Image 1 (cartoon, rainbow, N blue to C red):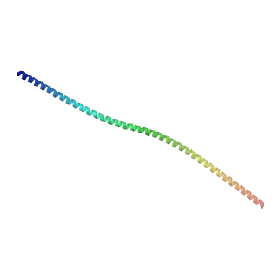
Image 2 (tube, helix red, strand yellow; image 1 turned 90 degrees about the vertical axis):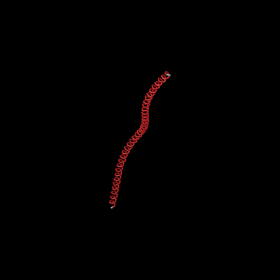
Image 3 (cartoon, rainbow, N blue to C red; image 1 turned 60 degrees about the vertical axis):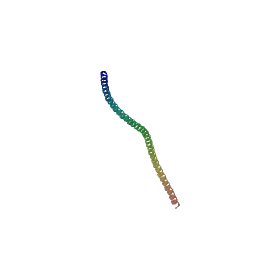
Image 4 (cartoon, rainbow, N blue to C red; image 1 turned 30 degrees about the horizontal axis):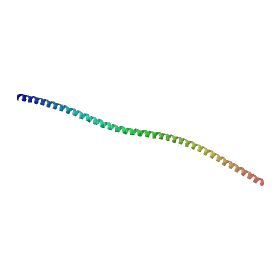
Length: 135
């Protein structure tokens, strides 16, 4: 019986030691779980930031592709503006040409008018001489 009681006491002591070890391990496991939860939160935060960053990258890529289209349109606009400038220069030169031709035409008509007036005067003189001769 004594041996049995002693054996029970040893077993109780062993159980207490095991219980203490289990409690210590349980506390250690709890600390490890808390660390893991903290790391998991950080990972989740990092994943959320990564997703937000990826969305920003997509938006920026879309903007950049839009800028490329705008740049192409700006190039076309510059080409059209150059064409308009060329057409304006051509128009100015044509207007100058028309103005010059109008001036030459005015001078020619004035010459024709003066020539016609001279001829009329000559005809009048001839007529008046003839009239005086008849007298």
